[in-house]
Length: 196
Image (cartoon, rainbow, N blue to C red; front, top):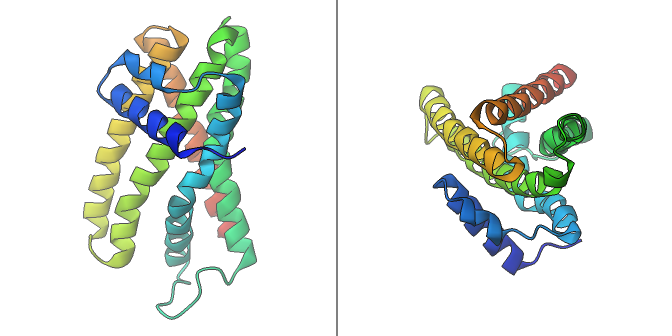
């Protein structure tokens, strides 16, 4: 399934509304079954973030050379790609059981759609500090500061979106967001472990 430019525009606009704590932003998303599957296809929009992640991992491993190719190791390319996909689907998969256990199955589809679009924005925004570091335009400390600031904003947006889509109070919403952070940390640890 291909995501249309109109859907990207509406979903990004809805995400910006959620960033400003406006629940009416949920109306911008396609909450149908088709919108559900297309929200997973939106991972293709994060290809620039994947390239930055790939370059950053090669830098971490001491393999990034100014005249070298970014795609000369199939193993690194594959592991980083799998990590990228896993970070996109980890929370929606975990939410299958949580939604069933807490009688939230009717809200599952809207939650996943909105979460996927927030993840697209999050991956793109969080790749900016790493890109600045790779280009030499930011020190490691400054890139870390930018990453932390962006992460706080994205976590807050996800928290509000979780409350709005699932109809839960602040504490359960925070627990779900925390679960997503833990899952993504686990994915990152596994990727670093596989790459050495």
